[in-house]
Image (cartoon, rainbow, N blue to C red; front, side, top):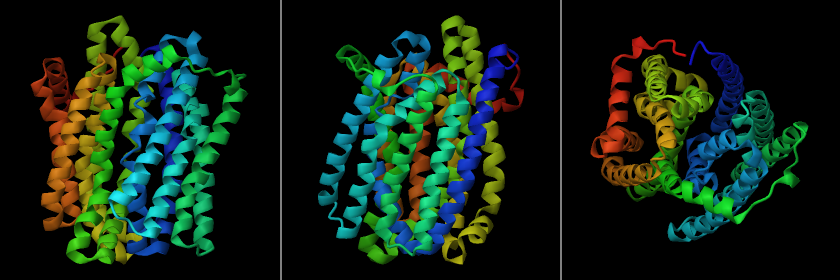
Length: 439
Protein backbone atom coordinates (compact mmCIF):
# COMPACT_ATOMS: atom_id res chain seq x y z
CA UNK A 1 0.00 0.00 0.00
CA UNK A 2 2.74 2.48 0.94
CA UNK A 3 5.20 1.73 -1.90
CA UNK A 4 2.73 1.33 -4.72
CA UNK A 5 2.03 3.89 -7.39
CA UNK A 6 -1.53 3.94 -6.14
CA UNK A 7 -0.39 4.95 -2.70
CA UNK A 8 1.33 8.03 -4.10
CA UNK A 9 -2.08 9.05 -5.41
CA UNK A 10 -3.61 8.41 -1.99
CA UNK A 11 -0.79 10.42 -0.39
CA UNK A 12 -1.57 13.31 -2.72
CA UNK A 13 -5.23 13.06 -1.75
CA UNK A 14 -4.36 12.89 1.92
CA UNK A 15 -2.16 15.98 1.58
CA UNK A 16 -5.03 17.97 0.12
CA UNK A 17 -7.44 16.69 2.74
CA UNK A 18 -4.90 17.59 5.41
CA UNK A 19 -4.57 21.15 4.08
CA UNK A 20 -8.35 21.39 3.93
CA UNK A 21 -8.73 20.28 7.53
CA UNK A 22 -5.96 22.57 8.78
CA UNK A 23 -7.54 25.59 7.12
CA UNK A 24 -10.95 24.63 8.42
CA UNK A 25 -9.48 23.88 11.83
CA UNK A 26 -7.95 27.32 12.03
CA UNK A 27 -11.03 29.13 10.78
CA UNK A 28 -13.56 27.19 12.87
CA UNK A 29 -11.34 27.26 15.96
CA UNK A 30 -10.79 31.01 15.88
CA UNK A 31 -14.43 31.69 15.07
CA UNK A 32 -15.57 29.37 17.86
CA UNK A 33 -13.41 31.25 20.33
CA UNK A 34 -14.74 34.57 19.07
CA UNK A 35 -18.36 33.46 19.28
CA UNK A 36 -17.87 31.71 22.62
CA UNK A 37 -16.29 34.76 24.22
CA UNK A 38 -19.08 36.96 22.87
CA UNK A 39 -22.00 34.78 23.90
CA UNK A 40 -20.52 33.64 27.25
CA UNK A 41 -21.16 30.11 28.60
CA UNK A 42 -24.95 30.46 29.09
CA UNK A 43 -25.92 31.67 25.60
CA UNK A 44 -23.17 29.58 24.02
CA UNK A 45 -24.69 26.57 25.74
CA UNK A 46 -28.18 27.45 24.52
CA UNK A 47 -26.98 27.73 20.91
CA UNK A 48 -25.15 24.42 21.12
CA UNK A 49 -28.14 22.78 22.78
CA UNK A 50 -30.20 23.74 19.72
CA UNK A 51 -27.60 22.46 17.27
CA UNK A 52 -27.11 19.32 19.34
CA UNK A 53 -30.83 18.58 19.33
CA UNK A 54 -30.94 18.79 15.53
CA UNK A 55 -27.75 16.74 15.42
CA UNK A 56 -29.58 13.79 16.93
CA UNK A 57 -31.35 13.42 13.58
CA UNK A 58 -28.43 14.11 11.21
CA UNK A 59 -28.36 10.46 10.11
CA UNK A 60 -31.61 11.11 8.25
CA UNK A 61 -29.78 13.38 5.80
CA UNK A 62 -26.49 11.50 5.62
CA UNK A 63 -28.68 8.43 4.93
CA UNK A 64 -25.71 6.15 5.53
CA UNK A 65 -24.66 6.83 1.95
CA UNK A 66 -21.16 8.25 2.31
CA UNK A 67 -18.96 5.20 1.86
CA UNK A 68 -21.58 3.22 -0.06
CA UNK A 69 -21.86 5.82 -2.82
CA UNK A 70 -18.09 6.34 -3.03
CA UNK A 71 -17.65 2.58 -3.25
CA UNK A 72 -20.30 2.22 -5.97
CA UNK A 73 -18.87 5.12 -7.99
CA UNK A 74 -15.48 3.37 -7.91
CA UNK A 75 -17.02 0.07 -8.99
CA UNK A 76 -19.55 1.43 -11.51
CA UNK A 77 -18.33 4.77 -12.95
CA UNK A 78 -20.68 4.39 -15.92
CA UNK A 79 -23.64 4.79 -13.54
CA UNK A 80 -22.38 8.09 -12.14
CA UNK A 81 -25.41 10.26 -12.94
CA UNK A 82 -27.88 7.64 -11.77
CA UNK A 83 -26.02 7.02 -8.52
CA UNK A 84 -25.59 10.72 -7.72
CA UNK A 85 -29.14 11.64 -8.70
CA UNK A 86 -30.65 8.87 -6.62
CA UNK A 87 -28.41 9.77 -3.69
CA UNK A 88 -29.50 13.41 -3.86
CA UNK A 89 -33.16 12.41 -3.87
CA UNK A 90 -32.66 10.20 -0.81
CA UNK A 91 -30.94 13.06 1.01
CA UNK A 92 -33.79 15.43 0.21
CA UNK A 93 -36.41 12.98 1.45
CA UNK A 94 -34.34 12.41 4.57
CA UNK A 95 -34.15 16.16 5.19
CA UNK A 96 -37.92 16.47 5.00
CA UNK A 97 -38.29 13.67 7.56
CA UNK A 98 -35.66 15.36 9.75
CA UNK A 99 -37.45 18.72 9.77
CA UNK A 100 -40.72 16.99 10.64
CA UNK A 101 -39.15 14.96 13.45
CA UNK A 102 -37.39 18.01 14.90
CA UNK A 103 -40.62 20.03 14.80
CA UNK A 104 -42.43 17.34 16.78
CA UNK A 105 -39.47 17.06 19.14
CA UNK A 106 -39.63 20.73 20.13
CA UNK A 107 -43.13 20.19 21.50
CA UNK A 108 -42.33 16.89 23.19
CA UNK A 109 -39.33 18.47 24.89
CA UNK A 110 -41.25 21.62 25.92
CA UNK A 111 -38.65 24.04 24.56
CA UNK A 112 -38.92 27.78 25.09
CA UNK A 113 -39.72 30.04 22.13
CA UNK A 114 -36.14 31.15 21.41
CA UNK A 115 -34.71 27.63 21.52
CA UNK A 116 -37.56 26.29 19.37
CA UNK A 117 -36.93 28.98 16.75
CA UNK A 118 -33.20 28.21 16.63
CA UNK A 119 -33.83 24.48 16.38
CA UNK A 120 -36.16 24.91 13.40
CA UNK A 121 -33.79 27.30 11.61
CA UNK A 122 -30.85 24.91 12.02
CA UNK A 123 -33.01 22.00 10.89
CA UNK A 124 -34.09 23.90 7.75
CA UNK A 125 -30.43 24.07 6.67
CA UNK A 126 -30.55 20.30 6.15
CA UNK A 127 -32.91 20.79 3.21
CA UNK A 128 -29.86 22.02 1.28
CA UNK A 129 -27.90 18.81 1.90
CA UNK A 130 -28.60 17.10 -1.48
CA UNK A 131 -25.90 19.22 -3.15
CA UNK A 132 -23.32 17.55 -0.91
CA UNK A 133 -23.40 14.37 -3.00
CA UNK A 134 -20.92 16.14 -5.30
CA UNK A 135 -18.23 15.37 -2.74
CA UNK A 136 -18.77 11.64 -3.33
CA UNK A 137 -17.76 12.06 -6.95
CA UNK A 138 -14.55 13.90 -6.05
CA UNK A 139 -13.62 11.31 -3.42
CA UNK A 140 -14.33 8.38 -5.74
CA UNK A 141 -12.20 9.98 -8.47
CA UNK A 142 -9.46 10.67 -5.92
CA UNK A 143 -9.70 14.36 -6.76
CA UNK A 144 -9.16 15.53 -3.22
CA UNK A 145 -8.02 18.95 -4.43
CA UNK A 146 -11.52 19.79 -5.67
CA UNK A 147 -13.14 18.40 -2.52
CA UNK A 148 -10.74 20.34 -0.30
CA UNK A 149 -11.13 23.63 -2.16
CA UNK A 150 -14.92 23.50 -1.90
CA UNK A 151 -14.68 22.89 1.84
CA UNK A 152 -12.13 25.62 2.42
CA UNK A 153 -14.05 28.32 0.54
CA UNK A 154 -17.27 27.36 2.31
CA UNK A 155 -15.63 27.37 5.75
CA UNK A 156 -13.94 30.73 5.33
CA UNK A 157 -17.15 32.34 4.04
CA UNK A 158 -19.31 30.85 6.82
CA UNK A 159 -16.83 31.83 9.52
CA UNK A 160 -16.65 35.32 8.10
CA UNK A 161 -20.43 35.58 8.40
CA UNK A 162 -20.31 34.52 12.08
CA UNK A 163 -17.55 37.02 12.83
CA UNK A 164 -19.66 39.72 11.22
CA UNK A 165 -22.52 38.79 13.57
CA UNK A 166 -20.26 39.25 16.57
CA UNK A 167 -19.04 42.63 15.30
CA UNK A 168 -22.66 43.67 14.82
CA UNK A 169 -23.47 42.43 18.35
CA UNK A 170 -26.22 40.35 16.82
CA UNK A 171 -28.80 38.59 19.01
CA UNK A 172 -28.51 34.86 19.68
CA UNK A 173 -31.04 33.72 17.06
CA UNK A 174 -29.00 35.22 14.24
CA UNK A 175 -26.26 32.68 14.92
CA UNK A 176 -28.74 29.92 14.08
CA UNK A 177 -29.24 31.51 10.65
CA UNK A 178 -25.51 31.06 10.02
CA UNK A 179 -26.14 27.33 9.55
CA UNK A 180 -28.38 28.04 6.55
CA UNK A 181 -25.87 30.52 5.13
CA UNK A 182 -23.10 27.94 5.53
CA UNK A 183 -25.03 25.18 3.76
CA UNK A 184 -26.12 27.50 0.93
CA UNK A 185 -22.53 28.56 0.30
CA UNK A 186 -21.38 24.95 0.26
CA UNK A 187 -24.06 23.97 -2.24
CA UNK A 188 -23.30 26.84 -4.60
CA UNK A 189 -19.55 26.23 -4.61
CA UNK A 190 -20.03 22.46 -5.06
CA UNK A 191 -22.13 23.02 -8.18
CA UNK A 192 -19.52 25.39 -9.65
CA UNK A 193 -16.67 22.94 -9.13
CA UNK A 194 -18.67 20.00 -10.44
CA UNK A 195 -19.46 21.85 -13.64
CA UNK A 196 -15.81 22.80 -14.03
CA UNK A 197 -15.24 19.07 -14.50
CA UNK A 198 -17.40 19.28 -17.60
CA UNK A 199 -20.27 17.59 -15.76
CA UNK A 200 -23.73 18.94 -15.03
CA UNK A 201 -26.15 18.38 -12.19
CA UNK A 202 -29.06 18.55 -14.64
CA UNK A 203 -27.75 15.27 -16.06
CA UNK A 204 -28.42 13.52 -12.77
CA UNK A 205 -31.37 11.21 -12.77
CA UNK A 206 -32.96 9.27 -9.97
CA UNK A 207 -34.37 5.86 -10.79
CA UNK A 208 -36.52 3.71 -8.59
CA UNK A 209 -34.25 0.64 -8.95
CA UNK A 210 -31.19 2.64 -7.88
CA UNK A 211 -33.06 4.35 -5.03
CA UNK A 212 -34.22 0.95 -3.79
CA UNK A 213 -30.72 -0.51 -4.13
CA UNK A 214 -29.10 2.33 -2.21
CA UNK A 215 -31.81 2.32 0.43
CA UNK A 216 -31.59 -1.43 0.83
CA UNK A 217 -27.87 -1.17 1.48
CA UNK A 218 -28.02 1.96 3.60
CA UNK A 219 -31.08 1.58 5.81
CA UNK A 220 -29.17 -0.33 8.50
CA UNK A 221 -26.55 2.43 8.32
CA UNK A 222 -29.28 5.04 8.81
CA UNK A 223 -30.24 3.39 12.09
CA UNK A 224 -26.54 2.93 12.78
CA UNK A 225 -25.99 6.62 12.12
CA UNK A 226 -28.85 7.60 14.40
CA UNK A 227 -27.23 5.55 17.13
CA UNK A 228 -23.82 7.13 16.54
CA UNK A 229 -25.23 10.64 16.44
CA UNK A 230 -27.17 9.94 19.62
CA UNK A 231 -23.96 8.77 21.28
CA UNK A 232 -22.11 11.85 20.01
CA UNK A 233 -24.81 14.52 20.41
CA UNK A 234 -27.12 13.37 23.18
CA UNK A 235 -24.75 14.73 25.81
CA UNK A 236 -25.33 18.32 24.68
CA UNK A 237 -29.06 17.77 25.04
CA UNK A 238 -29.12 15.70 28.21
CA UNK A 239 -26.75 17.94 30.18
CA UNK A 240 -29.32 20.71 30.01
CA UNK A 241 -32.42 18.52 30.22
CA UNK A 242 -31.18 16.69 33.33
CA UNK A 243 -29.50 19.57 35.15
CA UNK A 244 -32.25 22.16 34.64
CA UNK A 245 -34.31 20.35 37.28
CA UNK A 246 -31.35 20.33 39.68
CA UNK A 247 -29.50 23.66 39.22
CA UNK A 248 -32.00 25.71 37.18
CA UNK A 249 -32.18 26.57 33.47
CA UNK A 250 -29.53 29.29 33.39
CA UNK A 251 -26.90 27.23 35.17
CA UNK A 252 -27.80 24.19 33.09
CA UNK A 253 -27.21 26.16 29.87
CA UNK A 254 -23.91 27.42 31.34
CA UNK A 255 -22.84 23.85 32.04
CA UNK A 256 -23.78 23.02 28.44
CA UNK A 257 -21.64 25.95 27.30
CA UNK A 258 -18.60 24.60 29.17
CA UNK A 259 -19.12 21.23 27.54
CA UNK A 260 -19.55 22.86 24.11
CA UNK A 261 -16.24 24.72 24.43
CA UNK A 262 -14.38 21.49 25.17
CA UNK A 263 -16.25 19.65 22.43
CA UNK A 264 -15.40 22.29 19.83
CA UNK A 265 -11.74 21.91 20.72
CA UNK A 266 -11.72 18.11 20.52
CA UNK A 267 -13.68 18.11 17.26
CA UNK A 268 -11.12 20.45 15.74
CA UNK A 269 -8.18 18.35 16.95
CA UNK A 270 -9.75 15.04 15.92
CA UNK A 271 -9.60 15.68 12.20
CA UNK A 272 -6.68 13.42 11.25
CA UNK A 273 -8.44 10.03 11.55
CA UNK A 274 -11.27 11.15 9.27
CA UNK A 275 -8.81 12.36 6.64
CA UNK A 276 -6.77 9.17 6.73
CA UNK A 277 -9.80 6.89 6.63
CA UNK A 278 -11.35 8.70 3.65
CA UNK A 279 -8.07 8.71 1.77
CA UNK A 280 -7.25 5.03 2.39
CA UNK A 281 -10.79 3.68 1.93
CA UNK A 282 -10.42 3.08 -1.86
CA UNK A 283 -7.11 1.23 -1.30
CA UNK A 284 -8.69 -1.06 1.29
CA UNK A 285 -11.70 -1.69 -0.96
CA UNK A 286 -9.45 -2.67 -3.86
CA UNK A 287 -7.41 -4.94 -1.58
CA UNK A 288 -10.62 -6.67 -0.54
CA UNK A 289 -11.32 -7.42 -4.22
CA UNK A 290 -7.76 -8.51 -5.02
CA UNK A 291 -6.33 -10.54 -2.14
CA UNK A 292 -7.50 -11.52 1.37
CA UNK A 293 -4.01 -11.31 2.88
CA UNK A 294 -3.44 -7.83 1.47
CA UNK A 295 -6.85 -6.74 2.74
CA UNK A 296 -6.08 -8.00 6.26
CA UNK A 297 -2.65 -6.38 6.23
CA UNK A 298 -4.03 -3.01 5.19
CA UNK A 299 -6.72 -3.08 7.86
CA UNK A 300 -4.18 -4.05 10.51
CA UNK A 301 -1.84 -1.24 9.48
CA UNK A 302 -4.73 1.21 9.51
CA UNK A 303 -5.52 0.24 13.12
CA UNK A 304 -1.85 0.72 14.03
CA UNK A 305 -1.79 4.11 12.38
CA UNK A 306 -4.97 5.23 14.12
CA UNK A 307 -3.65 4.18 17.51
CA UNK A 308 -0.48 6.18 16.85
CA UNK A 309 -2.64 9.19 15.97
CA UNK A 310 -4.42 8.76 19.30
CA UNK A 311 -1.16 8.70 21.25
CA UNK A 312 0.40 11.76 19.63
CA UNK A 313 -2.81 13.75 20.07
CA UNK A 314 -4.22 12.62 23.40
CA UNK A 315 -1.12 12.57 25.62
CA UNK A 316 -0.15 16.25 25.28
CA UNK A 317 -3.80 17.28 25.22
CA UNK A 318 -4.54 15.52 28.51
CA UNK A 319 -1.86 17.45 30.38
CA UNK A 320 -2.33 20.84 28.69
CA UNK A 321 -6.12 20.90 28.42
CA UNK A 322 -6.99 23.43 31.14
CA UNK A 323 -4.18 25.80 30.21
CA UNK A 324 -5.22 25.71 26.53
CA UNK A 325 -8.90 26.35 27.26
CA UNK A 326 -8.26 29.28 29.57
CA UNK A 327 -5.76 30.76 27.13
CA UNK A 328 -8.20 30.78 24.24
CA UNK A 329 -11.68 30.92 25.73
CA UNK A 330 -10.93 32.84 28.91
CA UNK A 331 -11.23 32.13 32.64
CA UNK A 332 -15.04 31.86 32.38
CA UNK A 333 -14.53 28.55 30.59
CA UNK A 334 -12.02 27.10 33.07
CA UNK A 335 -14.17 24.04 33.76
CA UNK A 336 -14.02 23.16 30.06
CA UNK A 337 -10.31 22.40 30.59
CA UNK A 338 -11.15 19.47 32.85
CA UNK A 339 -13.73 18.29 30.33
CA UNK A 340 -11.19 18.51 27.51
CA UNK A 341 -8.82 16.22 29.40
CA UNK A 342 -11.60 13.62 29.56
CA UNK A 343 -12.28 14.09 25.87
CA UNK A 344 -8.61 13.26 25.22
CA UNK A 345 -9.24 9.77 26.62
CA UNK A 346 -12.33 9.43 24.45
CA UNK A 347 -10.19 9.92 21.34
CA UNK A 348 -9.07 6.29 21.57
CA UNK A 349 -12.61 5.09 20.95
CA UNK A 350 -13.49 7.64 18.28
CA UNK A 351 -10.25 6.95 16.39
CA UNK A 352 -10.74 3.19 16.41
CA UNK A 353 -14.41 3.59 15.54
CA UNK A 354 -13.51 5.62 12.44
CA UNK A 355 -10.95 3.00 11.41
CA UNK A 356 -13.43 0.18 12.01
CA UNK A 357 -15.90 1.72 9.54
CA UNK A 358 -13.66 0.49 6.68
CA UNK A 359 -14.11 -3.09 7.88
CA UNK A 360 -17.87 -2.71 8.32
CA UNK A 361 -18.36 -1.25 4.84
CA UNK A 362 -16.21 -3.75 2.98
CA UNK A 363 -17.72 -6.72 4.81
CA UNK A 364 -21.25 -5.29 4.38
CA UNK A 365 -21.89 -5.82 8.08
CA UNK A 366 -24.55 -3.14 8.18
CA UNK A 367 -26.99 -5.06 10.36
CA UNK A 368 -24.21 -5.66 12.85
CA UNK A 369 -23.47 -1.94 12.79
CA UNK A 370 -27.13 -1.29 13.44
CA UNK A 371 -27.11 -3.50 16.54
CA UNK A 372 -23.95 -1.94 17.96
CA UNK A 373 -25.20 1.60 17.45
CA UNK A 374 -28.55 0.93 19.08
CA UNK A 375 -26.91 -0.80 22.04
CA UNK A 376 -24.33 1.97 22.36
CA UNK A 377 -26.93 4.74 22.18
CA UNK A 378 -29.22 3.07 24.72
CA UNK A 379 -26.31 2.47 27.08
CA UNK A 380 -25.12 6.06 26.70
CA UNK A 381 -28.55 7.46 27.54
CA UNK A 382 -28.90 5.20 30.56
CA UNK A 383 -25.43 6.08 31.87
CA UNK A 384 -26.11 9.78 31.33
CA UNK A 385 -29.13 9.62 33.62
CA UNK A 386 -26.94 8.07 36.31
CA UNK A 387 -23.73 10.08 35.87
CA UNK A 388 -24.85 13.61 34.91
CA UNK A 389 -26.68 14.34 38.21
CA UNK A 390 -23.57 13.22 40.10
CA UNK A 391 -20.72 14.56 37.93
CA UNK A 392 -22.39 17.18 35.74
CA UNK A 393 -21.04 17.56 32.21
CA UNK A 394 -18.06 15.36 33.12
CA UNK A 395 -20.46 12.51 33.74
CA UNK A 396 -21.73 12.85 30.17
CA UNK A 397 -18.21 12.26 28.81
CA UNK A 398 -17.70 9.26 31.10
CA UNK A 399 -21.00 7.84 29.83
CA UNK A 400 -19.84 8.24 26.23
CA UNK A 401 -16.52 6.52 26.96
CA UNK A 402 -18.33 3.60 28.56
CA UNK A 403 -20.83 3.20 25.74
CA UNK A 404 -18.13 3.45 23.05
CA UNK A 405 -16.07 0.76 24.82
CA UNK A 406 -19.02 -1.61 24.55
CA UNK A 407 -20.15 -0.72 21.00
CA UNK A 408 -16.71 -0.46 19.35
CA UNK A 409 -14.81 -3.23 21.12
CA UNK A 410 -16.78 -5.52 23.41
CA UNK A 411 -19.68 -6.38 21.10
CA UNK A 412 -17.26 -7.71 18.46
CA UNK A 413 -16.75 -10.76 20.67
CA UNK A 414 -20.43 -11.74 20.42
CA UNK A 415 -20.51 -12.08 16.60
CA UNK A 416 -18.44 -14.62 14.70
CA UNK A 417 -18.13 -12.29 11.69
CA UNK A 418 -16.40 -9.62 13.77
CA UNK A 419 -14.21 -11.64 16.13
CA UNK A 420 -11.38 -11.53 13.60
CA UNK A 421 -11.70 -7.74 13.47
CA UNK A 422 -11.53 -7.57 17.26
CA UNK A 423 -8.26 -9.49 17.01
CA UNK A 424 -6.94 -7.09 14.35
CA UNK A 425 -7.82 -4.06 16.47
CA UNK A 426 -6.18 -5.51 19.57
CA UNK A 427 -3.10 -6.56 17.58
CA UNK A 428 -2.92 -3.17 15.91
CA UNK A 429 -2.92 -1.33 19.25
CA UNK A 430 -0.57 -3.80 20.94
CA UNK A 431 1.96 -3.70 18.08
CA UNK A 432 1.52 -0.13 16.87
CA UNK A 433 5.28 0.34 16.49
CA UNK A 434 5.31 -2.45 13.89
CA UNK A 435 3.46 -0.40 11.29
CA UNK A 436 5.20 -1.24 8.04
CA UNK A 437 5.34 -0.56 4.35
CA UNK A 438 3.22 -2.86 2.24
CA UNK A 439 2.42 -3.12 -1.44
